[in-house]
Length: 422
Image (tube, rainbow, N blue to C red):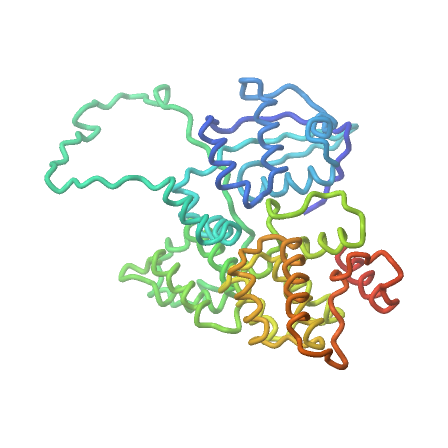
């Protein structure tokens, strides 16, 4: 998709496509902010406020955004993309003498819809952690009533109303929601061609089912042939795809396939766990690097551009999926383990450290760095005598990393990694 530049003088209007309520604000903060970050939510609420009680806003320039939110246009574009990806916003652009935008605003999903969404549900779980996620589910759980001794006497529509010749004037506008979807992850033509016509119904791959298949393929990294195999396994007697069994089978396939990694492994630190921007010191840049790169890309930079090995990928999977450590904490741990263990990643050694860090409930890069420094000092004091050929500590152990205490080799390594990160 073409990338359009954004200038302060570019204009925009907001078009409200749905009904927005005060309850939606609570949903935005509880469910969406852990995923898209605080700036994206601030942009959404600013657009909402721009409506001025109407369906269409007056014309504004993007300088209006910059003045209110005190952020750059690049930050606005990045946050806007997060809103678009999660279904809260659609963006249209027209380029003539001047560039103008239309922002279509959509209400957030209900808690029930969010918990049942195959992508957002998983991402929220990863960003919040098991305990916070469970607390959120309990907060919005619908109470269950015991109806065992009750009789359902609810009337049907034809028992109350009679038919009229023209009902179009009586109908309220359709409830409009913005689809949260990803691009095609599989080749649907190939799937149909690979399954005998007698087995699959021609209506099986409808729009909703294709969306579900794309979402499952995205989360569990399933290619077309593997997805075809799963679909064949869950076809019912009518040639239709059992969506619940497909979900379960896709998840089990991932769980038992050690060579596959979930999409979550490739995610970087969530916005709400990042440090405030603006620290231009070398230490600040290192923290920003830990928070911006996902663990796979971080390890690739440490390997001088070479993709991590299968064993290294399994280590990352264990840290992210099994222990649920935040990505920035994983990056700090990997850097620490490489320095302390002569540039080798040993699964047992890393798992021992990771378990301790998990119990310490480390969430941010800064917390992980400070904890590592503290533990290293404690272990050094316990050592009975100095050990020869001690492996160098990570550069960020040195609080004066801007000084000449840093070797040229270390300085060059830092610069290379930071250059790759940019």
